[in-house]
Amino acid sequence: MVLGGVLGDLSGSLSRAIKNMNNATIVDEKVLNDCLNEICRALLKADVNFDLIKNMKINIKKIVNLDNLAAGHNKRKIIQQAVFDELCKMLDTGKPSFTPKRGKTSVVMFVGLQGSGKTTTCTKYAYHHQKKGWKPALVCADTFRAGAFDQLKQNATKARIPFCGSYMESDPVKVAVQGVERFKKENCDLIIVDTSGRHQQEAALFEEMRQLAEATKPDLVIFVMDSSIGQAAFSQAQAFNRSVSVGAVIVTKTEGQAKGGGALSAVAATKSPVIFLGTGEHMDEFEVFDVKPFVSRLLGMGDLSGFMDKIHQIVPTDQQPELLQRLSEGSFTLRIMYEQFQNLLNMGSFNQVFSMLPGFSTDLMANGRDKEGERKIKRYMTMMDSMTNEELDTTDPKKLINESRILRIARGSGCQVKDVMNMFEEYRRLAKMWSKMKGLKIPRKGGDISAQNLSNILPPGLLKQGGGIAGIQQLMKQMGPPKDKDGFNP
Image 1: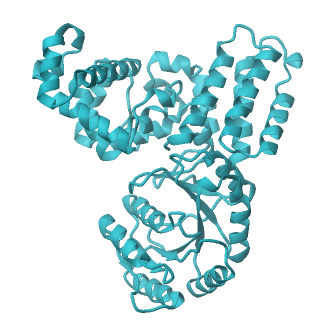
Image 2 (image 1 turned 45 degrees about the vertical axis):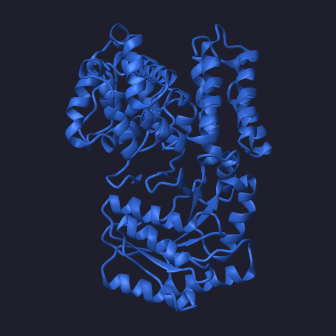
Image 3 (image 1 turned 90 degrees about the vertical axis):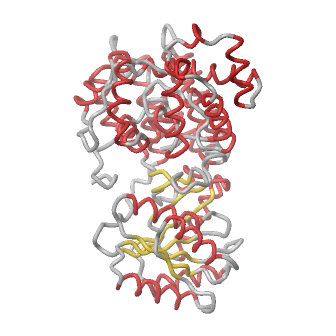
């Protein structure tokens, strides 16, 4: 799960608060208060409701009574666990949503206000399930907004997902019913109905939603909400839930919104489970929302099972054995950086992978899939295209790269000398991170991710950082039960 934009800033602030507390020589009342105050400031900045934050702080202070702790107790672990539990409680609805099953037809209806990214999210949802073996189809029942069908058609065609709609029929109920019946006959097991939105919560919108729900009898109604509304998410989610039985929520545009934390906590307060986060414009920038791994990463504690899955997703199968060998050796060359930049542009970001490891802060990683980040990476790759094999394959560029070579690379790539120097600085930063991965062994795809397995997978440095086998067991317990082959908790 991506922690980009302002959620990335929140993660950095929370991680620093925990790190400062862990680095203190003696954990006393002042250190605890400083840690909690820093956490509260970070949550307020992310637009989380003040009362929620105040209650969280009170609860943690009750749990962590330093005066009553017996000698020998690990105060740092107790504080970190209390912060983790309270943040989970803040974001957890405690109510699971309906989960589609492959091979059994499910109808999912999307609702939301206009401008929330509903149509794009429909396609992302379909594409996510298509990659996991479902046979999805899209029905455009939005006859209100001009261009809605064209948008869905364009998105679905790009993702190679069957779709239907109408330029002539103005009754959304007729369009929806015909579409659902058609795709049931075509044995599609996930039929997604996109409905119209409005600029505000109008009576006409809610009446239309009720009629559509009655006609199509959806197994799940998903409310799509723009994270920029922050704490207003509470009243908006409640209003939609009164009109149709909302079974789940998808929060969009979380990559750059100061109010993202407020939206997530507000939705949780309505007891409507958040199932996905929209993290960008690209089709694959769509992340499953699972509270415990999400909070674990917010606090810099990592998501080790997610790390294993992401390695297999991002790195092509034929490249994995060689990559694992390089990881175990800890050597990092400019050629490796070039190859991983290629994978990054195709599939995801370093941030998505390495932020899942405990101890790796989000601001340590590359810029990810934002436009500026992509431009920078492509510029670096152009520079490396102007380098010789000897330069690309050396494990110590300092010995090889001199002033004349830097000038040659700059001229050959059409860049400035300072750009080339920045590229080498990026290389040194990533090489340092790569060296921390020395000794890492990644199990084959589908391998069991157990605490004992992870203790064997992680290099000694990271294992120690995670608190040894006991720490890994605790982390796995926090993350909840293992997920099934479709990525869902059984």
